Length: 517
Ligand code: XMP
Image 1 (cartoon, helix red, strand yellow):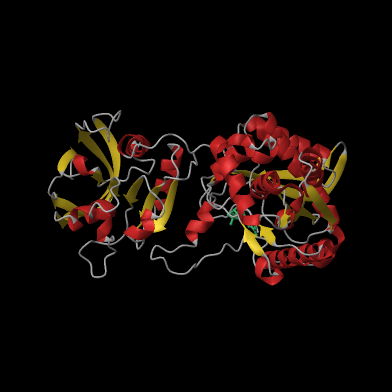
Image 2: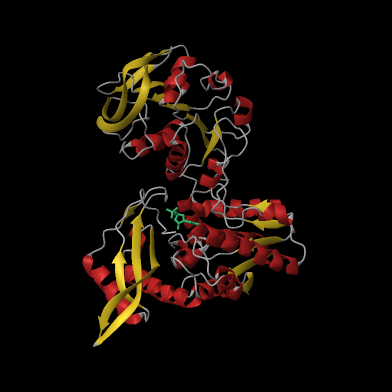
């Protein structure tokens, strides 16, 4: 049975947290998709959904032009369970003939839910449990057939339901971490109310993903840019499993990679997976173009532009190709769908190969576009990709180019590469790699005086940075045990010839960014 065949669909009413709802459902091992709230009952039927969740949103049901649901969804036309969350709960009550009114004051923050549910929806949830609220309106009269399942201090109808119609509504947000048992509630909805089995697992997904690629590509040819990062690696191996030698990967060595990276890519993809891999040594080209350039955005432009140039040259040499593979993930796809179903607005400027498919007249193949990052990692593991690649910290497209603060030269890059390798090695040795979102070294355009042996030194300074983060949008500096920092500093100053001083960066994001440039 295809694990994606009966998804739970999250209809997005403009919520900040729709993405999280879909993630939580998937964590309950049930496939979930996000669609704009304008999706009609007929369109929903084509997905064969196991359930529908109405997300929160900033509107009030009484506001002019408030986003509404196709009423056919509620008329029992689809005959699937429905869960309304916050605005979704109010909308459900409002459209079914209940009353929604403005609360005297907006409720925001932690509340305590008390319930005595026996329908299975709150099964396993403590009778008094913490929930997180953020709403201005509240439901003051229930629609016919509905009953109250739970209340909080300020909200009488915090959980309501019509169990016979399999409709549930919660005023709080079960998807956020401040509702500690929210995960359980969403899993209950998926398993007990919608009757879904725990089938969304990467071991089941691999074969349907491979089948999907075969169907789309047939015996045509696919080109894939390999960077050594998790997404392009998993995409390449998956496509290779589907179409074998009709896949060709191109790896551009721009001289801005970490120590040993080109060899690692070669070893894993060519030797281990026997993938057609073309490695292009473009180091001199990139270094020449970066000569005398210090301004970060200029560096990015040069590096991105050259990448496209080199990649195109190689593609021309290969002859006719039909598809360009990209490691686009579901969060990028969601970001580009507006809740009103309008045209795409955001395309991440971070994508190194953006613009290539149109320019080269290629169709796009995006085999990871349904997956969240943690699912990509699980898929990579399932495909046998080594842990050192699957669990890699994110690494920016412009690589060490934006960590050589100031001028980028071969000598400075070599110095930085050595320091970076020591930092990562010591983090791994201390067993801390998995606790850190990203760790990096920057070489600063500053020299400092030091003393080594009996001699005076006047050498470069580097800064170490390690952060924790959920999604790179915000970040906090990592609290290292002092002995780890001591070891890293000693090793860098002793083993890397041109560095005599190390600093540790304790800036969070905001106000700082993760990278220095
Ligand atoms: P910042 O420095 O903006 O970085 O806090 C957030 C995340 O994005 C990565 N990053 C990039 N990735 N091309 C990329 O592919 C880029 O130009 C780029 N700049 C930053 C950064 O490493 C972090 O993970």
